[in-house]
Length: 102
Image 1 (cartoon, rainbow, N blue to C red):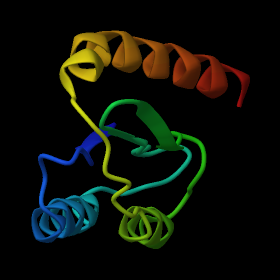
Image 2: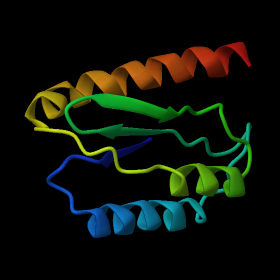
Image 3: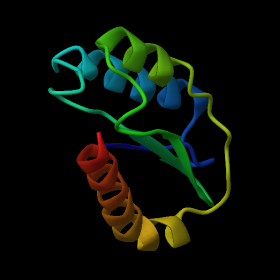
Image 4: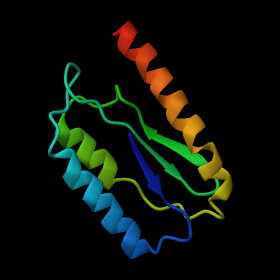
C-alpha cells in the first residue's frame, strides 16, 4: 500500500516527483490476482482511498492509476498522521476479506 502525502506542505513539483517515483517503483513488481497487489491512499487533512488491492490486475493499470492522482491540497496533517496506523490496519483487514472471498 502506498500512502501518498498530498498536503499543502508538499509543493506541486514535489508531489509530481513523489507520484512518478511510486509509479516507477510499481514496475519492479509483478502485479496480478495471484501475485503482487497494490493499493493507494492519499492524505492531507483527510485520508482518501484512491484504489484498492483488487482494483487492478496489471502493472500498466496500476501505473496509470497512480499517474492520474492529482494533488488536492489540504490543511494540516497531524490528525491524519495520528490515524495512519488505523488506516493501514483497516485497509489490510478489508483487503484480506476481499482476497479470502476471491
